[in-house]
Image 1 (cartoon, rainbow over the protein chains, first blue to last red):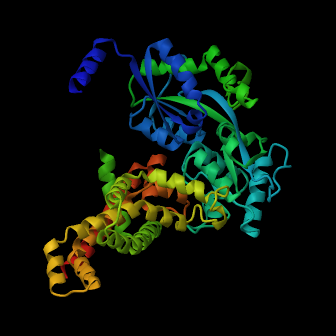
Image 2: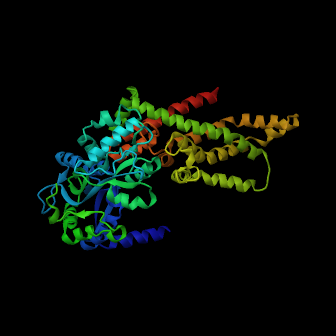
Image 3: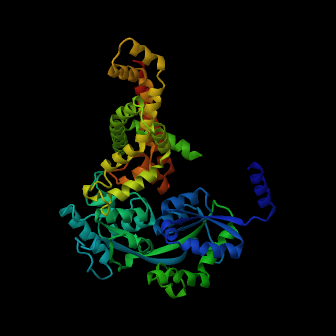
Length: 291
Length: 228
């Protein structure tokens, strides 16, 4: 056994090792399988060993700050801005900003088919804010019937939820979370997207989710998508090279790879045959008008 | 490395300020795991004695199975309960998924094999001579059982402490059937996992230190009890 291990170690060190690039990615990109699809293509093209860890945006950026990863792929503009302002990032080759956007999709509000708060027929660009107001009001008045499950974990999705509450005219800490007491309509799960969807399903509650994760979990859930329009629901994925990481050149390769036309095309078509609709949209020239 | 030092100072801060949120979570941890341990003990100590004092076919095999279940992964117990307690599951009508009750049940299942197995070992550790002497002096069988239990009390107490330790330190089952809901099912281990996931390493470490501190207090108390 020991001999076998020694032989294996020696055998491996004899060849040239592929260069390791460590990436912390948001769970939505990982759970949908997008990274699995991109990893092999990238590794073949650049002789790299892409090591990917799936974390919430908050945790991914923390790993980037400490230099435990070289690149982060995240989706919370506010936390990304703080990361860049804190001087933890470097610009990628060929790009003028540290934050390079490379894909987007939309958040959706999902809930029970009975839709007790009546948000399913809301339309217009402010529909998400109105839906949150209805959920909050009905939740306060008709306890037990209307509930909302929040990620509550400083992830990108949680960040977006807070943005919507703010845009709907609420002070998140004072009006929504309450003063440390368990407000029965607002449930802070403190878990990942998949676990939060399962919890919302079990508790017959509403929740905010990225579309990709919802499509991947939909088969096991009774929840239905109720609202998917409104400017605020835009979900933008960005990639940032970490100053405290290493392998800058390989990190440049990854950033340019993600924005290369053929990869953008691959992202656009990812799992479309399976779900009948795209999970992610590419950040190509045709979409540059978006924020 | 600075995180560990920062975590330590934060732990001291949180402890001496009696931070209300921390206190709530710590009490909930103690309450859930304490209840689970108490209920499991009430079942396992008599059941373990019953197994020890009776001779029956397959006893050796039963003890082997119990000891194998010591290694039961916490997430497996969580998964099993999640399926049972889900709205779509056979016990869904109780509506206890994502409540402290579900967490107590999960931890009871988790520590039952440990408590049973260690109780049996504790009783087996009592010298055969004591039993023989008691019988030769005319002790009835119930008196003999009581004598053996008294002789083995330290080892039995150690079994209970082990059970409590496994219950309060587990995170897999608590996350799956409790759901880490703030103000309802959030306990020390799940909040450590959450804070580490948020990137709040100092707070996560501080909470870990507080869990160890709690364990120390409980151990000192139980040791005092033993010495009396």
